[in-house]
Amino acid sequence: MDEIDPLSAEWSEGEVAVMHGLRDWAVTFDELTRHLSSWMRLPGSDANALGQIVWAEQAGEPLSPARLSRRIGMTSGATTVLIDRLEAAGHVGRHRESSDRRRVTLRPTDGARAESGRFLAFSGAEIAGALKATTAEEARVVLDFLSRMTAAATAANVRLEQHARADPGARDEPHDATTR
Image (tube, rainbow, N blue to C red):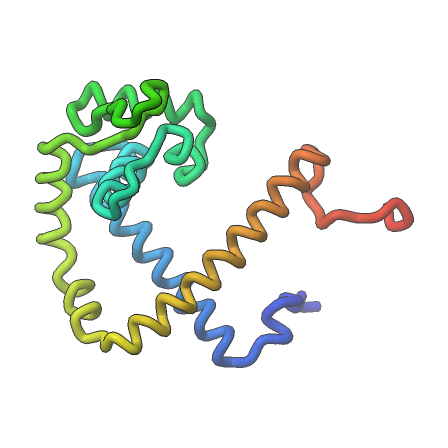
């Protein structure tokens, strides 16, 4: 007997198509990150981290090691080792820019910024073209939608993290005492 996905069984064709489109974008973006890894001659996790650091700086919101750790899904210890590797390779610097000298922000070096820029110039023509062909109204609608989807996924992640902390061995959905 075929199992039916309880979510998509109640979704319209359009909603399913949107979810497939989001999945396709996530998969192809991940593939671009793997190409960045090869381009920069870095392990995949290091390239992902460097990409996050570069994007955050470009957005004017440089990452702390703790925020990077959450974004890439690594423990703080593993993230420290990764940052040490990126720093030793000349890709990232730790900076104390705040009046609170204990706060550290991560910034790409000029060399890493230039090399990632060359990668984007080589790989990003089609993405830039798709963005340029998007009207301001389309961009607003897409951004609103993506903001709602990000908020929904964030809420699900928080719930899952809380459930994992409450019952670290749990793999199924939470049950009450009568269903165990």
